Structure formats: C-alpha cells, structure tokens
Image (cartoon, rainbow, N blue to C red):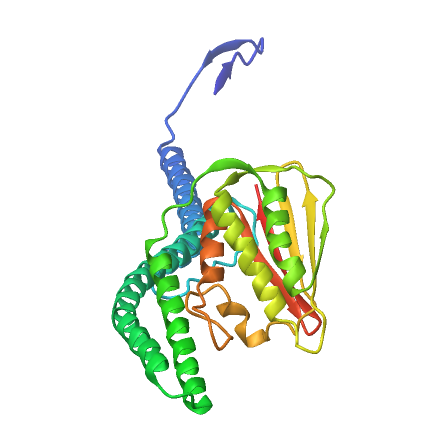
Length: 327
C-alpha cells in the first residue's frame, strides 16, 4: 500500500500488512491441483492396465495355443499343422512350427518304413530258411516217383503239377532270401539308356512289341547298374503280365532329360492297377498275381530312393505307366 503527501501528492512510502487468509487459500489450491493430478495419473494407470491386459492376452493366446499343440505332438498319432493367418512375429513362429512338423512327419514315416523293412527282412530270412529246408527232399522224392511210376498220364500230370508247385515255392523262398540279404546298392556312374535297352532286348522277341523313344544313346547317372537292370526287368515283366491274353502287348519306354534329372517312363496297354491297391504296390510281399513273391517293386523302390531318385505310377483301365526320376 502506497502512502502519499496530501499537499504535494508525492510518494512518501509503502506499507504492507500480512494477509493470513491468502496463505490458506494458496494451500487449498495446491492440494486441489495435486489431487487432480493424482486422480488423472490413477485413471491413466488403470486404463494402461486394462490396455496392457488385453494386449498381453492378444499376444499370449497364440503362444498358449502353440504350447498346447506342442504338448499334444505325438510320435504315434497324426499331428495337424497350426492355422494362423496373420503375418506378424507370431505368424512367423507358427510357420516355423508347421515346417518343423512337416519334417517331423516325414522323418516319422521314413522311420516307420525303415522299421517295417527291417522286420520284413527278418521274417523273410526265417521264412526262406524254413521253406527251403523241406523243398529239396520233396522235389527229389517226386522226381524219383516220376521215374519209377507206370506210364499213367494222370499220375504223371499230378506229379508234374506238384513239381511245378515245389519250384514256385522254391522261387518265392529264394526271392525272400535275396530281399533279406540284399546289400546296400552301389553308387557309381553308368549309362542308364544302355541298361534299359538291354532289358528291352531280353523281352522284345519273346513277349511282344517294345518301343524305345530316347533322344540320346548315352545318359550317365549315379547308382547301381546291376540293380537298375533288375528293376527294368521287373517292370517289363509286370507290364507284359498286365496285358490280357486276347491283346497284343505294347510296351513304350520314354526318356525326358532335364539339367538335373532324368525321367524315364515305361507304359503298357494292360488292364491297369485297381485303385484299392494303389497304396500297396510298393509294400513287400504284396502281389495280385497267383505266383510271385511280391517284393520286386519293393526292391526297386529301395534301390531308386537310395540313389536319390523316386518311382511312382499312374494307372487307368487303358494301362499303367511307371515313372522313374533319377538325379
């Protein structure tokens, strides 16, 4: 408060008086401001907790699902891949899991196939041993009976039929024994065109017409040439056997060459393979013929896959085509 001279109106001095009520008012204002700030921070904190909860839930739900799937992954049951459409980090993790699951299923299938082959080898060796032991004396006895028996045609036909069945059993036992003792295929370069042509020449004159459509006379691949020759021989035999007796067999072999693989196809004009047998063709001891051991295609599949190739077929009522892809 200013003090002035009443006559000259000049400033003489200043006078101040304490106002205690204003101090209390200031404190109340400060408390209100702090209270408002605290309430705002509490509200923001609560909202942040809610947002964080839902954000964490959105992020962790796929991880929980992935964890449950991993816990349910079994070696015996069929494992289904995860379905996750988003391409975020969780999506990348799910894709990696699905790829791992596919590799796991492939390894499981390969292991199961290897176990089956090992079991079949053991059984085949035992069966071959048990069958071949009594066959030789049976055959010798029948041959001796055939020499000393009278000239009755009926008796001779019966003995011949028995000898034929004995030979069939002997061939089956020999095939099983060969399958059980089959060594690991060799890996060496050889001309696969020449091997196929040799197989075709063996059957062309006696069984029917064979057409070879190759653009080259030499194509070197890596594998076992002897085993490959047996594979081609078996495929030729199966092709001729699939043709009905009232039709002339026509077998066609073709070669399609690329920079990395050679694809060979052997087609016939037979009756085809029934659809219910498609999954059993390469299984050991499976055959639709009255005679035969049913291990030829199993040996073929093993030899081709050992060389890094693959074998499959396409069949219809008009014939069957076997494909062999060789690196």
